[in-house]
Image (cartoon, rainbow, N blue to C red):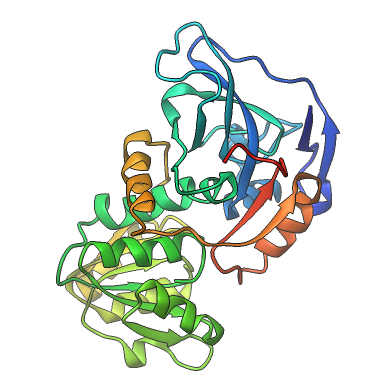
Length: 319
């Protein structure tokens, strides 16, 4: 089968299309014929070698955690899936998911039926960003009616789903992004828009109950200043250390949250229900064939992608 592999850390050109052996499912796994795999920032962060944990050190490495496809075969202990089922999910995180390939083995309890309203490209775009946005808004904190939520990088992968989930929960949503994304975000439900290129958000935003920070760095520090006393700051890029958490609590009266997203089939099923009801829509800005994974990484690394990038592994999908 064809798969994208990296034999070393480095720039996107370390990614190569190679012919590799098709994997065999373990007793509790399914073999999925992959139709689409989405590109997430964690893919190229790992590819660049930015983690020193030995969990990421195995080479050659097949990138990817999100996939949508069709079950080819199942292990002897699997009772929840059958061959020909159309499924999607985020698999094996934080260990290698190996979804940039024509076939991937997946733990049977980490995938669910593909939303009927989406083709495989759209379905591949949902799992990681959906699970991240859901956990940030509803598990790390409890966003609900009347809350005022500020979402940074609101037009990005996690951001554009978080906007829709927060609106579904009854919150007022403030989104930051570049000016060319204002119409896009207004259509998704953003109540107030801040063009970060021409305005400093802390000059025009205040009394926020929750901040979802997909940027980090100075944005995290400045976000603490616009939160109400007792507000919550959920940051995604880098885990704040204890000193920073304590200082933000002491100086601004806010709680800082960080987490590592994990597979959760039950929550993914809840998100899928919202998708099929037309209440949440994943946006795919561009697709690439599997062989052009390096170009997809190049685009993702610009940090200016609207919605998601997806590898269309098979042109003809079982939608």
